[in-house]
Image (tube, rainbow, N blue to C red; front, side):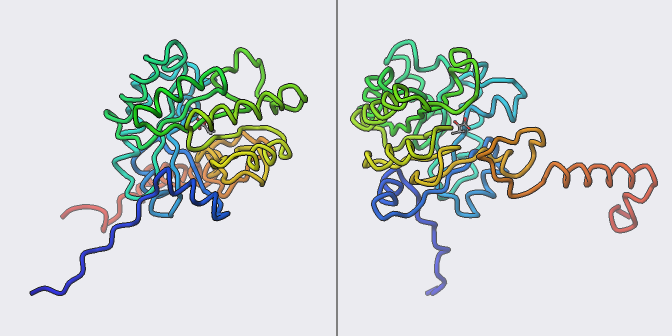
Length: 275
Ligand code: KIV
């Protein structure tokens, strides 16, 4: 009889895991991914949550806003990520106009994200205005992450990507929106580009975790767009962004080196050909 052990499977991160992390005071790491190769690297590195964000519109498709993204685009990107992941919780972002018209349409969109892409949860933007929709989706067995503060799908309403909820009234509404999402059954909420003190207040008022981007250190977790944190986007430098690499320069150098090797005849060499 063989005594060889099966390779141990990594323990999967679930929506429960992230709620328990908040309870224990363990910070949650989340990053975006849109393709198989990057998602595989992140999962192996140990990130707990991978968001297939509609920021794919900017960093993958080259649009100025997230508005043009379709549900089919998001399902495609999410399915690529899901195929790479063994451990992380994969959240598929519902794009603009795939959930705002009716709760029924939202449920159908969320269902497609789960069944066709294999997402483990969905994310959508908005507070009180979408809380009955969130409840409908959660009641159908689909976990929902909310998104408050700067909600990029509403860029044409805001007119700017500046910090949100600096004024008392908007801050008060944001606190109410967060509570409405929690009451509707959301398992977590992204807080984007809001003052750090407000993020602290919201985080302390909820039993579900908050994940911040430009929302300071008091959130239960943090998220960055992978292209931004790897320094692939040379021209995007908001104050909240920490760049962990300068891949724009490294890739430019590698491609330039390759071009010059091809032109000089240095590539391919003896070992890089078949005899
Ligand atoms: O689409 C996205 O990448 C996001 C994150 C910035 C939270 O919503």
